[in-house]
Image (cartoon, rainbow, N blue to C red):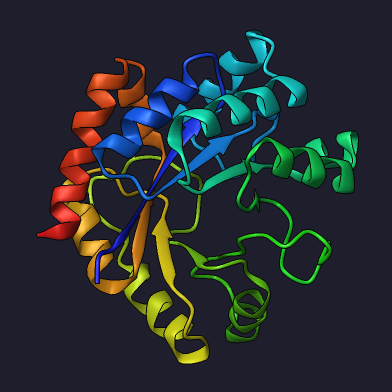
Length: 233
């Protein structure tokens, strides 16, 4: 069974074309960051991308327009806005869900909103190596389609090696759920992608994808294709 490849991009004027390139390169899902001024889970690359997006005027309404434009280019590929609770508090949780789904959102990730809170917004839940077994079970029961395994304690960003904590986290998650498990945070090279996929059902790549995307759609296509080849090897 093919392993899932999720590519994260920050919302911006060129995001629709970048997302289309990622899909052409082999991405199964595209996660679109809606920028927030204090993104606690994000490392320096994505934090800087958020600052650039905000400086360019990417507020919620503009991000929703970006989402709709991306949907028009990527067909049925799942699109997942990723953001923080403060943005939804300001916009309105129900209004955000309705408008995002109308713009093409398949699901949602709200990085700082734990399972058990805001259950009215069905979304992809995150668990980390520090999560208890009870917390993993709750997140798995409430997640939308797949469970996001945060491979390390800390922020997003490329690392030299895959986190050693993923093995244990994946095993604990497997013990309480049969839903797909996708690993993210710290995965940037084809070798890391393959190693993470050996333990899970898919991977999420963010910081390196954002860096490569700065060089344009063709560079991103080639990078995603290298990840896809590693996952399919």
